[in-house]
Amino acid sequence: MLIAPAAVLLHAEPVAPMSEPPMLQIVSSALGELAVSPTMVMHFPAPLGGFPLYREYALVPAAREGLWWLQSIEDADATFILADPFLHDSEYGFDIGDAEREALRIVDEADAFGLVMITLPNAESESATANCRAPLVFNLRQQLALQVISREDRHDVRRPIDLARYQPHAHGVRMK
Image (cartoon, rainbow, N blue to C red; front, side):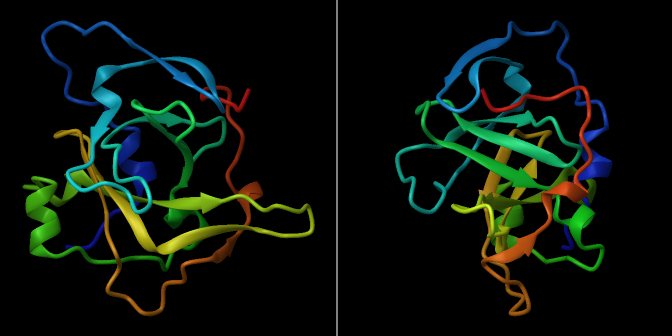
């Protein structure tokens, strides 16, 4: 199953319950206090690499189109920045297998989208990099997410990425 660009899917309205649940209050060391809709809390059936204790994360839009924050519900210090790889590279793509489809409970391909983790540089002369080899795949309808190791050898673990290509927008959360 080929994963679709996130930009198209994230603008769709999520399936709303009969009444809107109260917002969750989350504290983030990087982002401050956040009010997050419970519909944007994702459960990882398998933990992210290097973070075996955490399985619940809030997916929060950043202040640039196509960038997202992934904030651990369980640890205020575990914050990641994610990017829509299709905005950076229209040729990017990867398949997920039957086991990943089952873990994410994907029935319709339109329910799945992928984001890549970004590593910010230590020095101004360096570039941010994207882990295109191990994207995160989301099923918003089921509130599930999974880090998937791509079967594509052409994808780099540290691919340089120009964050200026992600346009600023008024909505979204900025670092504090």
